[in-house]
Image 1: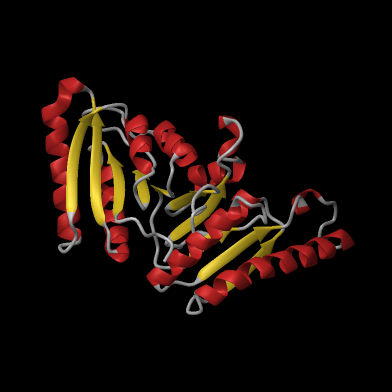
Image 2: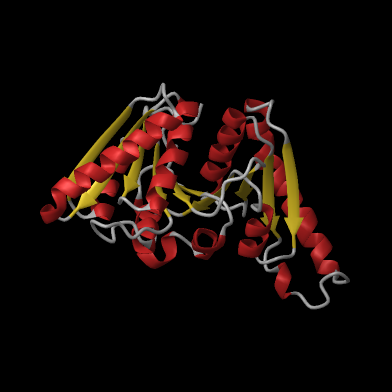
Length: 274
């Protein structure tokens, strides 16, 4: 299986947003056979309140998953820096999309974006409402999308879910009279051929996963968010190299801002030792 580490790490801040993310992460940890580690980063002056809040969230997680081993920790640290420092040693890092806790504005969008960009493991940002539908993955044929595709196959396999592989034709939405343009047919044929080659590798490894392919003329962010309506998870890839401004990429960033369900961001450095 893809996720072999034994800990799911969750950054919380005492808000309902982060509590919801923690309960979601507890279910993921249970599926992985992993333990759950909750971390609440706080200002040193608010240690007592932070410790109380993280204990309360841990209680929620244990109630949701009684057999799960849950560890709760409050630390006086910068939230993004602390989570990033721990990320290389865990299977999955989970944060909420927003949060305004009584202790500190700890897990706002800037923290979620920072960990999604720089973490040494896959990052799940819990936003929207997870549905009972498929796992959706965006595929653009770049090297950055390959670990994301592997992650998505594994997640669909573990959850017994259908896998929807969504691909926007390269720049197709810029073509004039798109339905009549012969260039569209060429783009689609080339894209489907390349996608088929990538999928064949993982379909052999995960034969129980039912795969549905979607090719669209929509902008990639619009296409992914449309397919993610009712999905249990949307998976996108990103580059580990380049400037901070270009690593995450416009598609991954757009998904983090607009997806109707939780988003997993998988860097192209993940899985180099497979």
